[in-house]
Image 1: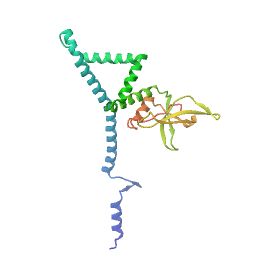
Image 2 (image 1 turned 45 degrees about the vertical axis):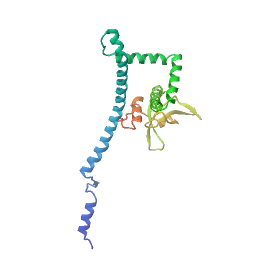
Image 3 (image 1 turned 180 degrees about the horizontal axis):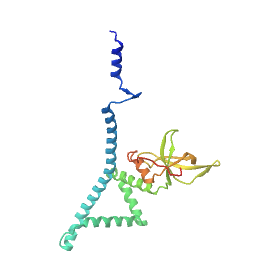
Image 4 (image 1 turned 90 degrees about the vertical axis):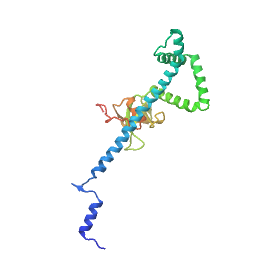
Length: 233
């Protein structure tokens, strides 16, 4: 069957979105849905990243409070003749302070290392203890990391931009100044790449170390709307 010119034009219009002013338009429903779904997903993921550490902190301290309150409250009843609210909280403060004393002297550090080694070897317990210890060590290392400032560099090829941290003063290489820059992996910033770059290849930012770390750990979900550069740049 042969189609006329009018029939062919009608089919072409049905297959392609309407064009206005030479620009292709999407249907309103599809456009709104495409914008709404990724934004909603990112908001939920960002909410989870905030809620998880809060929930874990609450559960841990609630468990400590209930446990220590249950241990010391009977002693308080024997001594005072009645229960004393807040004993669990006071016990937590005392226990944490005692652990701090152990961690800051030679004998205590030796005992804690022995306990750490035993916990890491214990069946079942090590499955929970080892990851928790690694997280604590990672956070401590990040706080002690000698990052100087946050920059943006092209990596791994021209046109691709990544967040990076200047880690030290420039070094001389073949008569040229090179800046040591650490590019962290996301979401685990404990690993990454160390590059020696020309100073002119670095784009300075006004991001703080904490803001940049939040971006890396969240995979970009907790990102500022604008990454500003210093006025002098």
